[in-house]
Length: 320
Image (cartoon, rainbow, N blue to C red):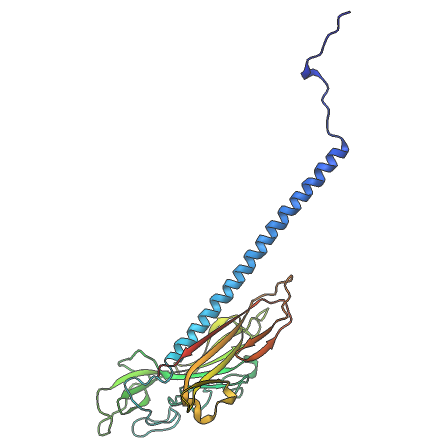
C-alpha cells in the first residue's frame, strides 16, 4: 500500500493548555502591576515636586516683599533727622494738623518715622484695633515705617498721607495743600514723598475665613487711600513667621534678639532683621506623615499631620 503524507500545513495545530494560559496571564498581571506602580510613583513624585515648587515660589515672593519694605525702613528722603519726632496723629501746627487714619493699628505711633521697625513676639498686639483675633493665626507681627523711595509732585490727594522733606526735617500732610516752610529753619530744596507703613502678620486663611480647607497666609496692613490701613494678601501658604532683630551693641557687635528681648530704647539700633517663614502645602497628602519639629529663628514649632512644609530664612541688612 502507498501511504499518503499530509502537508505540514494540513496537520492539526496544537493550542495553549489552560495551565499555560493561566501562567501567561499571571506574568502579564505582574508586568502590568509593576508598570502601574511606576506610573503612579512618577505621578506622585511630579505632584510632590509641583507642591514643593509652589511653596518655594510663594515663600521667596513673601521674603522679597518683606525685604523691600525693610530696606526702605526709616527712609527720610533728603532729610537728615527726624524732626518733629512724633506720630501723624499729633498736630504739628502750623505745618501739619492731626491726620486721622481709619483702621489704625497704633494711634500713638502711626507714621512715627523714628520708630522705623517694631515687632511683637508670638502675639497680636492689635487685636483691639486693626487685626481682630479671628484674623490672626500665630507667629510674630512686624511693623515697618519709612517714606516711599519714589518722590511725587502735585496735585496731592486729600486721602493720601505725604511727607514734605527738607534737610532740617520735614512734616506729614494730606492734600491738596502741602506745608509752607517759609519762615522756618527748613530751607529748600523740598521733596515730597508718600508715607509708608506696613504691618505684617499670619492669618488663618488666604481668601476668607469661610474657605475650605483653610490655607494660612502672610498678610499685611498698609497705609493707603483713606487714609486707612488697608489689608493686602502677600503670599498664600505661610503658616508661621518668626523674626529676630540684629541690635547694635556697645562693643560694636550685633546681637540677634526676639522682639520680647529688645529693650524699648533699642529699637532705633536695629541693624539687620532675620526673617524665617514656615511654608505649608494647601492640601494634605494621605500617604505622607509629617511629625517634624521645626526650628524657626530659635523658636521650636512641632507638627503632626499630613501637610508638606518648607522653611525659608533670610537676613536683611538695614540701609537707613
